[in-house]
Image 1 (tube, rainbow, N blue to C red):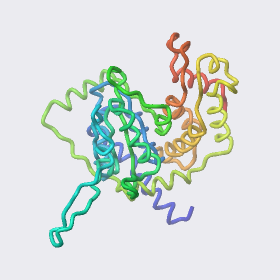
Image 2 (cartoon, helix red, strand yellow):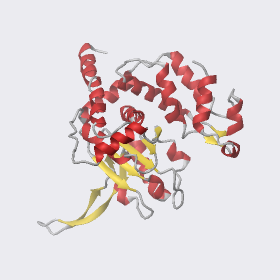
Image 3 (tube, rainbow, N blue to C red):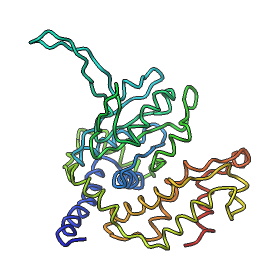
Image 4 (cartoon, rainbow, N blue to C red):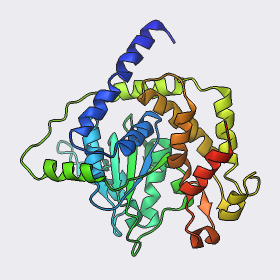
Length: 328
């Protein structure tokens, strides 16, 4: 890495703690979830956010967008939402000078740097699939024309784990396209007390813009350049392969899992570990990065069987045991 580039990157990396401070002006606690959303952004991926109502999921994403000087759109997914409501549609317009009529593509809310897909499991598969091309290709095709999405581009989808009536669970193929599956927990007693004090008065925090969209793109390039040793890559490879029942050395995987993570999980874990290193102002991956991110990377890529469900065994417990048995 050239000296000028290194100085530039160090300046950008030094802004990341300031970014987290700005978000903390509005969001109390939830530091782990905020870190994982930022990791997803640095790794150029998308994330699925799960939590009960009232945990400030929307506010968290909106605050982050403000601090990043990035455009933000929220889509409320409902059973009657159509693909055109997401990607956009053509409208008939008339040229006032010539009188000729023509179709013009009216861009939908997906054309933003940060898109919050709220309660994605409340809309039918046809509409859920409209996000697939946008997530993977970072472009939208309509009427045979390809439209590039803004760069950087981040989709954060949320779902409610409580109500399942009238919902459409995401298919495995679409789940796998999310880089991270982030679970939000209730705040602790002190954090909840701070929320009550801070949100029921007239005070409104002023969010300073810390990073521009072009600087985020530079940080995404830096993330790809972060060093990771061959030993750690081999460990990630063995960890991902150990989630597959047919070839796993772990008996509990064969006992509780129907199928395991694919190669995309290994790619995600390497990239996310690099992004966590950048977020912590390091230029090299350490084992702790992998151990921490194994949960959000793998939990939606492992399918549990009926026996596991009967014994109340979830994917996080499987990942925990794998980390104990598959050593670096």
